[in-house]
Length: 399
Ligand SMILES: Cc1cc2nc3c(=O)[nH]c(=O)nc-3n(C[C@H](O)[C@H](O)[C@H](O)COP(=O)(O)OP(=O)(O)OC[C@H]3O[C@@H](n4cnc5c(N)ncnc54)[C@H](O)[C@@H]3O)c2cc1C
Image (tube, rainbow, N blue to C red):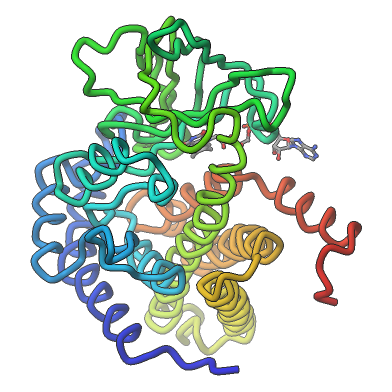
């Protein structure tokens, strides 16, 4: 086994670290001071502001940070999942929400020529924005997405979509989204089809953001979508009709879980740094907090927690890049990262005392997001269910 990152991987990580340190972190204080009274921020984009967000994406593009995850054959940078994790970890060391531009969902790599040209390549050309919008959850189908009720019926010209999708992030900002719907209820998992729903279709009929749902994290507002006889052309079907659930699982599941793993690692890492600095500078009873064993043990436990999560995540990404099946390991990464981040951030808050519970430090931003991520992208119970099923079915010879 080789545990060493390559020189290219280290360079990439350092480049993103510099970008985050120089461009994003300096904006945090102003955001905390100026924006914290403005409730009802609508989306994560508005943390930076749309113009700043797009300008930074263009600036990043000039140093090669563009279409990072798509293969070189289609014009992307061709980075693997390990690089994805390294970059996500660095990006999430700030709560100033930002993503590099030019990317499209990998699921479109297997799609028809029309979708490749008009969506995948359009993202790389900077003509369309995807923003990772996958509209799956419904009022009666969350942890169990196969229970979805949104239907798509062929009327001879178009697929006609009807139903409600809820708790969807970024649906207001993306130009298009991936959206699964039932095309044949009698076939269960094999009766769900994946569609590209384009919000730019002129006068898009039958599609409406019907509600904005505020969450405990002020600037992570989610959307509810109403589909009311919404027509979608045949060429917007991704893969085969009826195979959308399988296609989405194949392309989105592992990537999504690793994204969350990297996110929690970055957030927890930053909070541990903050706790360490605070412990060194805050004096009580005549000595810095850092001199007290109670505080040292909290820092030590957090460092250990982070280290363990980092290595299971890196290992999982490394295996996935070699083409191995990591459905079990990716569930472990998501679960462990969710629990780790909450422990580490909570200890950082404790070390900061009352200050940690104010809105004057960055900690509360990380705290709330870490809480959200324990449900988003597959709740922890479902990750445990996946792991337990795998062990009980003896699918994996890991132990
Ligand atoms: C911040 C955030 C962003 C999101 N973004 C998106 C998005 O962009 N697109 C999208 O499609 N969805 C999104 N979601 C929705 C998310 O995927 C769902 O919330 C999640 O799948 C859980 O569904 P639910 O909330 O309906 O919980 P339910 O399915 O009602 O479950 C409630 C609780 O019970 C647990 N539970 C359910 N079944 C079992 C079981 N069999 N055994 C044990 N425990 C169980 C769950 O883990 C959960 O804790 C987002 C959610 C959040 C919080």
